[in-house]
Length: 595
Image (cartoon, rainbow, N blue to C red; front, side, top):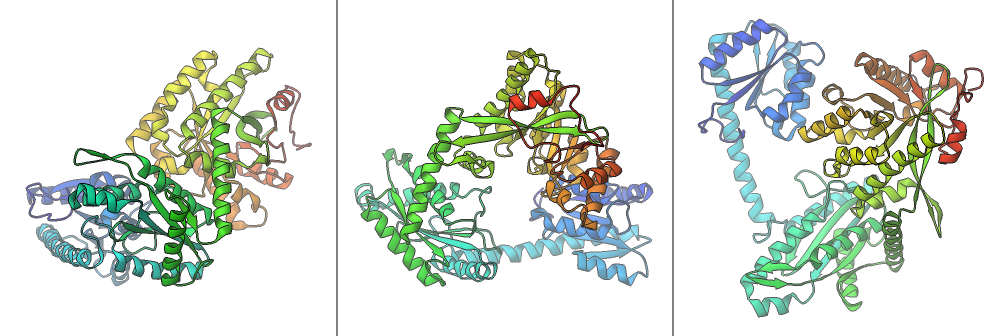
């Protein structure tokens, strides 16, 4: 149930009761259900957080002292969920424990109740919290209505000129401190006056609303910026008036990133619009200014973006121009590079290299990670750090992933035909569109074609895939496990590390990121983190691979910690399939004396 208007709904409010004492939970459940509430129980904070987003409770009754995750940390974590920002939370503290009461409010509690709980008044206490929260929601709703009238365009629902300038000034202050780039895009629809005069203002308004929707689609969560959100200096799309729109893109890695967004907008707008039974084709001219290159204040940046937009119209419309000439050159270079990437994917110009993974105990090769290499005709070897994001940006990650899986299995088949013993190959799977890639079906067909066993294939997933915690991801992973594949979490510790998803998903292997291994000999903190990850993984019956091992001393320390497998330049860099087949023989060992 939505938290708004809780008590006006016909559905009983849902209360999540979090307490490690079973008898206390049963007593509270009986009282609350008798008073007309629904109750969901959790025996500790970790379980409560794992179930929170699915349950969407109307209030939480939270004990302070619990194992695994106490009430204070649980309360703080709930407040970080969008659904938990204003949720009523009643914390249960000791009778005379003033310190716990203070900490409860600091953690974000709405109210507290002391032990032993007076069951007779508990339901009244919760009902009062819900009413107070409902009144607060009504105030927030009214504030939002006033804000929308003053700062939002009534036609498109986008921020208006005033809101855009405010957001831009705030972002400039933050970007100036961080010394990061920010772009302003000024967009004008080509020939809009003709369309408006021909079809009428009603059709023109509908077209502008559709244009706003398509521009929104061009700002993706996976970019280095995201869509406008209250209380943050993230990207902002606004309607300036008429057929003019502006975009603010803060925290860019490079100026040409703004060119990618402009190109995406032009591509989106090139698709026909269906308005009042008319098929309308439009284009847009876009000007781009960059902070701090083209100006240091909002007025200059908007003026320069506007001038660049007129330059784009002079250049033939349906395109974009930077205010600085050299940035237009960089944008053209980026376009050329992306075209080369597209051709490389279509023509399968990539090559798989294989970096050995070894048993830490005796140094024998246990498997290999397949890594993609690309030799560009002009630039030579291009780093995956450059071409993988371009492949994702171009929407080609699915055919690229298909090729990687197919190539890895085909290579295993060739090695088998050469008499080489079977070996486990790990393949990286991009987090982009994971659920859409239909990985289980593709792997089933590929291993059938090459008559290979799925037991020798491992899929490496980033933590961001698992962090979504959705049922579709879980179903896919179960299908892969059912086929016999191994599942590993890549670069563990650098992203969304969570015991919850390690517990809930069928993970076989945890790969510790090289960032922790690099300083393991000099940083007690990194050594402690690595040791904790190994112990945690083993307690959950998972194996551990340490990446980036370059020194014998690192190897010895990881052996002492009980790490299962190692990977890094100490053993071998990634090598061609031919070199790896020569390396992988019964006599080839990275022994304790030679490693």
